[in-house]
Length: 431
Image 1 (cartoon, rainbow, N blue to C red):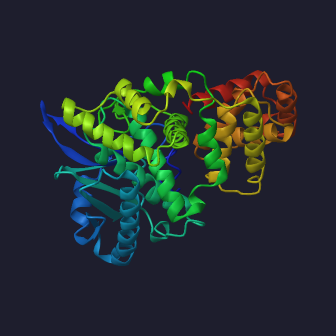
Image 2: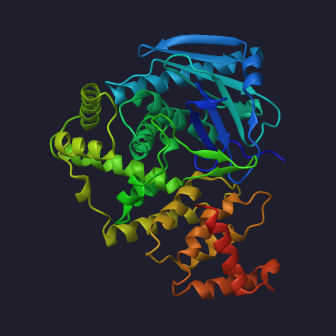
């Protein structure tokens, strides 16, 4: 069976790695990891990738060196990657001005049956940004964003996001919410410019709906800190991977940054992001370190004229409308047999973000179908289960659950309590 290693960013987590400790000393390495949901051994592919990717092509884009290293038989694909990476660098540099990335190297590597969890690390070379992927077949490397959404997302959105971390370097300190929020903001903008198909309406809704929480700033500012350039914390425990975040937290960070920029423009600041980044540079030069959360928020208030504490939440009318639109988008995917449909995933995220808004019988029925669907892999059941658990007290929930049990052969002998327990078990895995 094909391993699930090319899914949506929330489901196949791609990490930028900055450094590791070795034998009591800090050995500076850089590279990437790919972690799939659940647990599994992390396979080190570093030596294999370095040995196999003997060919190289390199060009300049926006005063940045862009290089692709690849296996000899993949020269044609490498040229496609180089063109795509140049687009990403050029568009990212425009958004991030005055910041820039010194260099970008991408490793294009094909191998049969790549492991679900793997890492690739090389000795750090100055400010060069290193990234790559292990692909199983040539078919996966197709730049048609309508038919190969996951692949395009992993290139245009993910790489634009990842560039943020080396670009920020020492400008911020222990402010993961800012790095990830800005990374997603830039990733959205670049992906939208290159291929609008990558940002379906349900994806935009999922980000906007994430701000529906009176304590959202506590969630953001309490986000576990992992250093300036790290963007994900994973820890090995007896060769198991434990992920410590949620898609909604990334969306929340993105919407927070997006709202600040939008509010600043309303106050007459023409290019709020540039103003903020220049202010962060001045802060670093003056203080000899990056700005912490409280200092970033102070700069946002003084330079962008936005008091982050006063950012408005969604009105009830807005929330009801979002759930209605997400439900419509979700139900339109009923005839799509694929399990990683972007519109389906993001529509469910909207419904998860707004648990106080009731959903229709038809929506509950479809969520139940997705939550109890038998598959070789179980992670597609997590988020539908989470949406259902948050609505267990909805007036029509019990009747829809009973109706679903009665119409599903393999559940007829299962108690409603057991079904609810299963939903809770699956929903916990979405956290």
